[in-house]
Image (cartoon, rainbow, N blue to C red):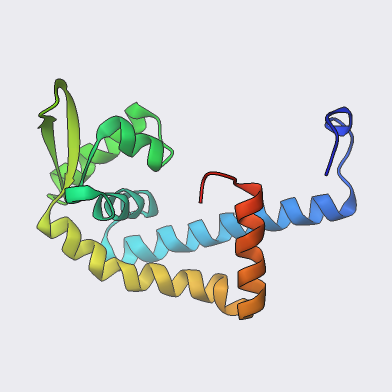
Length: 154
């Protein structure tokens, strides 16, 4: 583990290989996911992320601020994305009953259906580009590494 004093020093070859590998994999997988989800299901990978986040939320709904945090978008970026999903009838905006100034995004039946259709495409891309290239022990080890690198986020 690096000390705070080494934070500005150049990366070692191992550090650079690990970092570059993660960035390259992320970029390729996200590009492929976006392309395939748009072509096959007319939703972007960001829209898929919002739909699946709502599908996993209690009563298929979340406050807009909570949804923005979970999908790692700014409030204005999420608002524009949700506007597109509302126009496509995949999500509804409802006034928050606990705060009349706020809104909740709610997954519609059509949104749940589109998500179910898109999930197979999503999972296939993840497997082709990532998980099928590793053995079970490697996947377990990588999961443990992510738990260490992302404490409290798993």
